[in-house]
Image 1 (cartoon, rainbow, N blue to C red):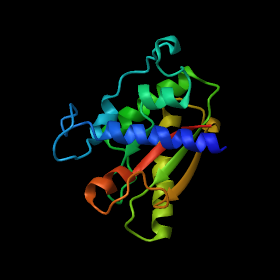
Image 2: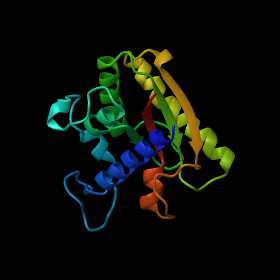
Image 3: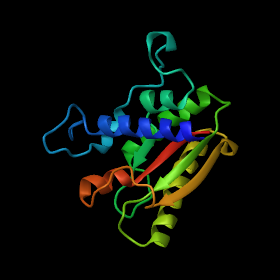
Image 4: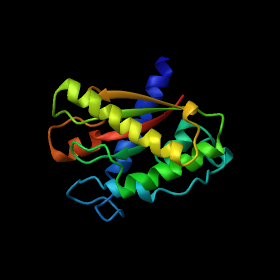
Length: 175
């Protein structure tokens, strides 16, 4: 169990670095350090590099993170999927259909603002928005589990819009 946590933390660190390496136009790192929420929508299609070439092993959590994107982001106090988020969830659905034996947990997260109760409810709505869209795209609901962490597990520490934007998210985690 401890090695799984370390793996998730390592993947999170890689994602944080990757998220910071995009400008608002989705190309390269800008000096303003702003996160480009559309970067998740421009991920490469569900084409895996063979494990022998050093790419992630197909069908693993790392494969999902690297080749599809494991998270979508939300606007302040919102749980509806933006066009960019829908594009990412569509790629996630294609990936899940490619690996029908894989189950995932969808984690709903919020930024630090608001009460604990409000953020738990909002995180649940965010996770359920992703689940509902995945099911509408043909993914079996029995493979999808949701959980809300509210504001309890921030991806980025800080009390500014850049940090808050990265913490308003839903994340797919391979079970």
